[in-house]
Length: 93
Image 1 (cartoon, rainbow, N blue to C red):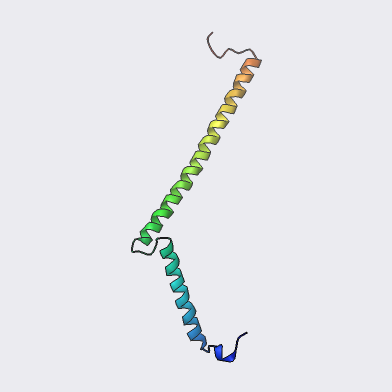
Image 2 (cartoon, one colour):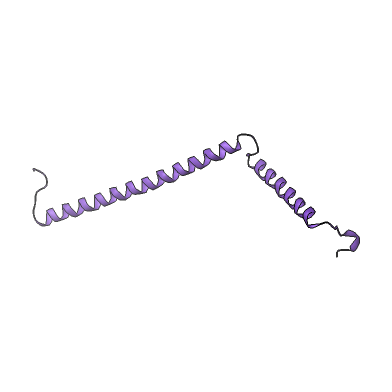
């Protein structure tokens, strides 16, 4: 239970300044914990974002490529099946 003698009284601007300072210190500590507290942190983050964007583009293109190949194979199998059904020779044997 809070007693009157344990209470701290401050103005709203003092309270806001205290919160701002605590948030700033917390952010600094969090960045330090993940190794982003030095002068190179900005460049590191830009590099990470660039690498992530490149990964996303590569993944998207890989999916497109696989989809194209699967589609090509399905059409080839269909054509071979139609050729076999209608007795069309595909190879000179």
